[in-house]
Amino acid sequence: MPTYQREVRVEAPLDEVWEFHSRIEGLERLTPDWMHLRIESVRGPDGDETEMLDTGTEIRMAIRPFDVGPRQRWTSRITRRDRGRETAMFEDVMDDGPFPTWRHSHQFYAAADSPDEATIVRDRVEYELPIVGGLLGPLGWLGFEPMFLDRHRRTKRILED
Image (cartoon, rainbow, N blue to C red):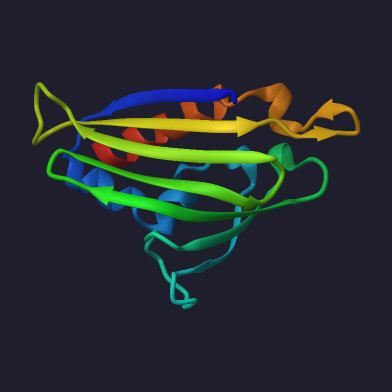
C-alpha cells in the first residue's frame, strides 16, 4: 500500500503541540484554505458533540478542493490515541469518503536536543488513491505534498508565535 510521510520541527513544547492537535479547532486551522473544509459534526465515543479528538471520536466533514466540483463527504474516526512523557500520537481512519483506504498517523516527539522547547511533528498516511471515471480523483493528480507542506507551515506559524 502506498505511504506518504512528512515531518517538521516546531519550536514549541510537546504539551502545547499535542494540545493543539487534540482539538477539532486544530484540524480546522491546519487545513489549507484551497480545500474548502467544512466540519459537519464531531461526536465523541458516547455520541455527544465534542471538541476533543479522543479514541472513538467520529468527524464528519466535507471538502471541495479548489472550489471545483461537488463537495466530497468524508467521515473519519480516531482509532488510537497515546500520550507518553516524550512522545504522543493519534491515528484516524476514513470510514467513508473519496479514498478506498486512508489511515493517518499523527506522531509527536520531544526534540532530542531541546525536549522542553521543540517538537518533531510527523504525519504518515497509508492510502489507496480513488479512481473516478477511470482517472485518479482530485488529490490523486495533485499529490499530498502541497497539502502537508501547507499544514506544516501553518503548524509552525500558529505554535511558534
